[in-house]
Amino acid sequence: MQRTEVIAVLKHLNSSTPSRNEARETISKSLGEKKENVIIDSMKSQFGRHETVVFAKVYAASEQASRVERRHILVRNGLAEKKQAAQKAPKQQK
Image (cartoon, rainbow, N blue to C red):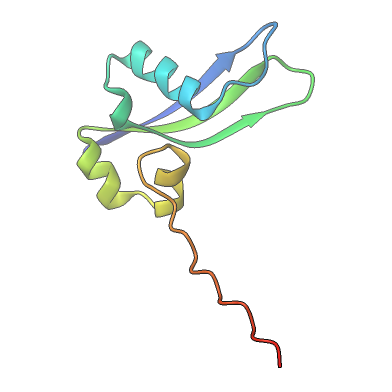
């Protein structure tokens, strides 16, 4: 498996906690990788601190990420569509 695991600390003074998309952009720019190859696994921030600890995985190719990563992680990162549950038909009244 060709991936690199990254633990990054993102500082966000005078702003809110960055979104997953913003974190992916920041990490991809700092590592010189494509945004599609960066998968954010988890983000943790503490109350009162202006920093977020991000655990990310950087793959050699986005196809590799889609084969290996869990589906809900891909959905959170915007690389897969969420499956819609089939809606039940309304009950008929007698």
